[in-house]
Length: 166
Ligand SMILES: NC(=O)c1ccc[n+]([C@@H]2O[C@H](COP(=O)([O-])OP(=O)(O)OC[C@H]3O[C@@H](n4cnc5c(N)ncnc54)[C@H](OP(=O)(O)O)[C@@H]3O)[C@@H](O)[C@H]2O)c1
Image 1: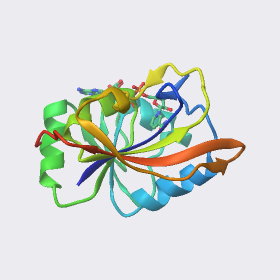
Image 2: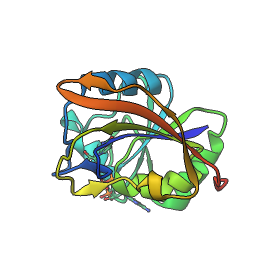
Image 3: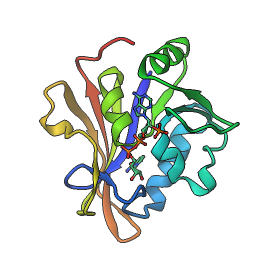
Image 4: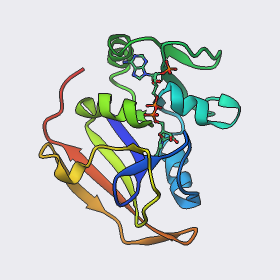
């Protein structure tokens, strides 16, 4: 199963200045609990946005990058190489964790997208595709609103009805 996992603001914005726009401890806890023990896939910019450019602990980290190298990650150099790596792992739970370029490239291959919607506008420079305007995706779950560090968030799940096989 391949899922994208993301938090996005009211405009589907996800980041600016190669960083997150909000500090959301409850969403971070959900992200950690969902992804720990599984495989995460990210782009070079997202890896470089982490503290000391270190990968996420207790997860297999796959990074799509033309240049970046880091001992604790599996690096793939092209989209075809990434698809081959994911195909080998088709029985695993795989989470696409960003950023904008990687979400856009991999969304057609995702079974689902776990989107934490933030009821705010963060002035983003990087965006997630608007799934409410994408005929291939259906929102199948939306939580009650939750206060997270002074912001209102909702956990949602979108199902890809037209998934493309790897
Ligand atoms: N809100 C959220 O949930 C969330 C989650 C994750 C990230 N973000 C945010 O998203 C932003 C980063 O997104 P982004 O779009 O700038 O970057 P990104 O998707 O993280 O990474 C882009 C990089 O991936 C590599 N890449 C992409 N396509 C490739 C291909 N076909 N072949 C080889 N390499 C390829 C290149 O890396 P190299 O430059 O290394 O060659 C490229 O520069 C940040 O602001 C971050 O905080 C938000």
